[in-house]
Image 1 (cartoon, rainbow, N blue to C red):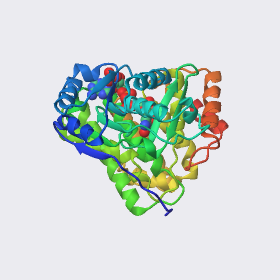
Image 2 (image 1 turned 180 degrees about the vertical axis):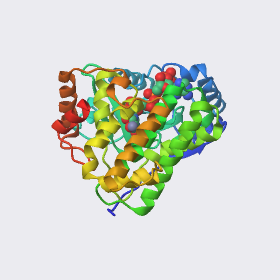
Image 3 (image 1 turned 60 degrees about the vertical axis):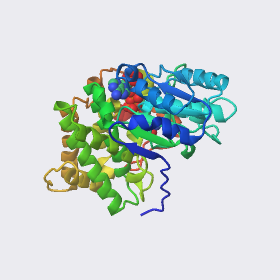
Image 4 (image 1 turned 120 degrees about the vertical axis):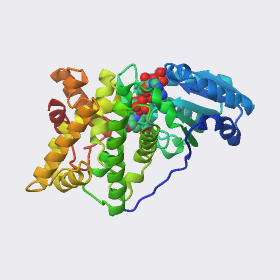
Length: 390
Ligand code: NZQ
Ligand code: ZN
């Protein structure tokens, strides 16, 4: 077990009709003007934005709006948001949406609280010293950004998708009504469940410092998401299943399932971010497409963890040795992806990169991480290329 520093300052307000409490929550922050930040319209169509405005109006909170965030959120809108908020005197950001909207809000928050170009932080050439406070109304269980210290932005000029992690961006509060996720298309629900699983799997497949209690929480979380993701395929309005998945999404990426380990693997995320930047695919689907190839490539270096996962999470019968058991677990995970209509390779993801594009992604992934990546196995650019080729 390694030392750890577990920091989760976000207040969670969870359950039915919680969006009506937003006015009071924002009022408590003591701000002058709020930016309501949202995506391409789902929150308008569902009526959620209207209910939020009612609650803000009732509490006498002043706000302005900026919609238009797209999945794989763009740097250009972040820059527009920074300008707009400066002009308007915004001092609190309310993100109404999923990971893309929350991450866009975090980037705007960095831009407003620091001088210079906000992209510097995502290129890791300097650190942000502050971030505007952020509140969240979550509409999709997936990224965990509502409690995470992370923000992932795509530079629309260079097609680079880059993440920046800093505790100062962790939201002040997140309002989570599972009913708000019932309007999601089945594909986005499945992408979300995949991403949630991956945030814990990234922390689980490590070669160092694993704790029994952390493993038990992680395995319970993964089993819960798998069970409820399957329920949601046939019964998307099942409140309890929505709630299980939604709370799992936050716990999966707030650091809890990595306590005591070596920081996790996160190579699958690195590999996916390059795919997302170049081909604009949904993040969860990109992860499902890459995971099986990653797992088979690294299993030699992390065999006992794969065997443990196979038995404790996927419920497979142990084989003659850890390797056989581990491989059965990988196959079972891919069966699960198919059961929720997720891809298990790049072709099923709907992309057909050229060899040159694969090389570019591997090279850029290695540059983005500034060194070899992974804990299950340390990956160099040539390893990343082989995984893409698989
Ligand atoms: O834009 P609208 O119209 O709202 O539609 C969105 C979008 O098209 C739609 N949607 C969201 N809630 C809905 C809904 N449609 C109907 N009903 C609802 N209730 O779903 C689509 C996807 O939304 P998005 O915010 O992109 O999804 P997600 O939460 O999966 O976020 C993905 C982004 O988060 C990043 C990913 O890389 C990707 O850019 N990540 C952020 C992380 C973090 N900050 O901690 C960690 C993750 O690993 C991830 O990298
Ligand atoms: Zn993710």
